[in-house]
Length: 442
Image (cartoon, rainbow, N blue to C red):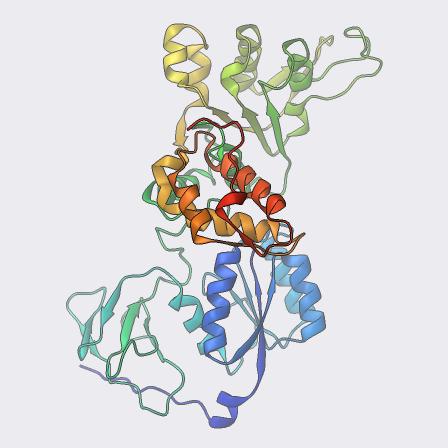
């Protein structure tokens, strides 16, 4: 068996002040990474998107930039390419652990990779002198790091594809070793940034979204009101090859039946009373991108037949027009109803249902993943803290939230917290008295 020694960085390198910039829309990811890098004596600046990261880089001149695998405002590949051109000396690493092409290898690259991998939810093994690898036939001896080493070592054993990362000692004489996820793959249980929650049902949604997003397969999202169906649809669009094209949403229940056809398919001038000029519909506006049909179960049967024709042949006819228009869209539909049962009972066209429900994703009620409540509360308070003083939650308030049944699900939670922030006034904490459920019935 081959033993690997731990390299010790020169004192001048270890003690030098340096700055890292973390760009991610996920505040939880930024916070964890900031804590790890802070422990390695980095000064950390945070950015929620690509534009802010660019401004922070110009202001702070960081030695390193860690960019999440998705930016809410800029295309990642274009951002990386442009950033390298304007900041050629900055060590640029993506959150997946991969190194941007042509990025210079800075003296702190190992620390950046360690910080990233240390926050990944990978299985750990306690150092006992040897660590089983992915290949059960071989082991690698890992000596305890020297006492004067401030940096855990990154090992890539010969013939092994999965690197091993030594983290800081958990206790005296004990070192934790991780089999790191391959740098070009996301951990299978990693959740999407839009979907807050680490419960098994939430991680399953993230898994299903990742699997189907790159395809053209129609997706039906079922779940109770307020459970985040539109967030799932947006994640499907973001991870698809159509992400640069429009994401167009229409609520079939909120649009009057008399106007829904014109809203979807468009109309010509004079097609009906009040049509003083022609306009394209939502389907045509989504050409090349994704059309999100929210509350598809509320669509009138007469209009379902016209939608079915479009789904089958990709052609639509504007109201008042005899010409057909070819449109390329991916359809994602959502409903809070049991659409299969509705189709069985005749309330929804069965042929349209089977066209839309090729791939099914179900969003759970908040009561089904109540363990995610503290994480959701933190997310919403952080979100509200962008435009007002950040509030914290008193234990009594958390207990009151936990005891609630949440018939309105995650949307209700957000509204209750927003109401509580207003009721709290200048108080830095939300107390139990500030938690008002309004007219909600438990």
